[in-house]
Length: 482
Ligand SMILES: Cc1cc2nc3c(=O)[nH]c(=O)nc-3n(C[C@H](O)[C@H](O)[C@H](O)COP(=O)(O)OP(=O)(O)OC[C@H]3O[C@@H](n4cnc5c(N)ncnc54)[C@H](O)[C@@H]3O)c2cc1C
Image (cartoon, rainbow, N blue to C red; front, side, top):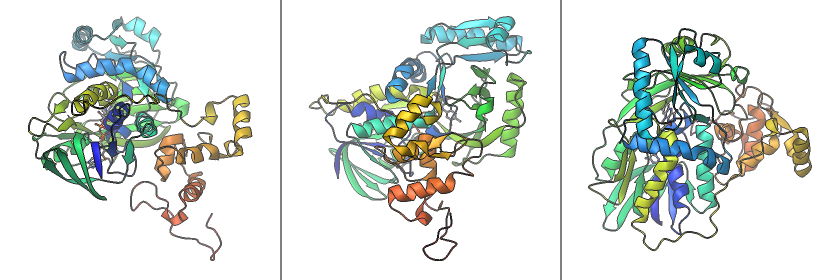
């Protein structure tokens, strides 16, 4: 198969670039090795839209962070993605840390971050009553916010698909051969050719570059662990609460999520290879530090833990055409603040790719908007009645914790990039995302997936290969285990 542009990696960077390129009359494919989008760093991070006072002035991180942050509210509105402009507070517990806040304030001004403010102890307490009484002050960034990172990635890819991009999941790139007019790319499902290759492979971006005969991209992997609390605790804090950064990163934060839960983390641990397991020492560490920022943080109420891997390459993002293979555009080392930066990075990378296609024209029928499935939990009674009148499946509650109905699950499974897994459904409409973590609704979700995908119940997976849950019917043939 021949494409103009092949994007490797279905994280937020690859998905944002796919959407940007979908405006043009080009054949574009997004290839993702895993069974779903956002299975790398884009699915397991803090979900903070950073204001941009932290990156060094003049760096790519600074430029894309500040621009990306400004793009988020309108983009989330267009794509129907949960986003909240909460603002952020970085707490200082010592005179030295207060000096660091001053430095970050000046840096933020240099980076072009609007409306930064340094608050004293009293103003801090007024703004955020849950912040520790030990804090001497805080750096307040009103433009910061929170977003659902996996929903953002899915929405970008769905919108790209609606506009003609081919999204191929469960297909890993295994070899790349440079040719005069582009690349020949071997995948786990066949061979493709592309005139331009965009490397957004996250932790594997160095490997992709090496395969393509391009430069070495050194990569350090750092695990960050999180604890997610029940929605009941989502109101404990109103802002994203950071501690001052150190050599390991931005420190542990306590934040409401875009969907109303409370999130604590991340830790920072250098790993030799990718490993997203949660550990007791990691969980204890983030709890201890979280409690320092927010003494009311309870010991109970956690509903799950998870971890993400930061793919760090030196002190800045690596973005631009390869010096050795110019038709390979590197978008590597996209660590923090990559989620915030992705929409801005996508605009520039799109321009870099377009340089090879002077004939590419804007599509007159390009759709900027994408609609998510209706959220029954947040709908009024009148809206619920209207939904049920249109489709009675919107009246059948499947996930009781999050009030997710059969109609929403079926709609998620009929989206432009359908993923027939339990986790795929969870990320698209929150069935199984609540307090019981799917203990009650999983069997019904599996049945609906089996019906929509036309596969037997035993073939329904939680996520990738080998994660099947049912082994077969318990009762005699024709009976059902459920
Ligand atoms: C703990 C943690 C906290 C963070 N917090 C924030 C935050 O609050 N705010 C913020 O702005 N940023 C944050 N970040 C950074 C942000 O998550 C990343 O910058 C961003 O998700 C990177 O997206 P990506 O698409 O480049 O990479 P990824 O999301 O890792 O995507 C890369 C994709 O490439 C695929 N892939 C790999 N190899 C192949 C192959 N051979 N063939 C096909 N596909 C392949 C992978 O499966 C993966 O899906 C955080 C990161 C971590 C880990």
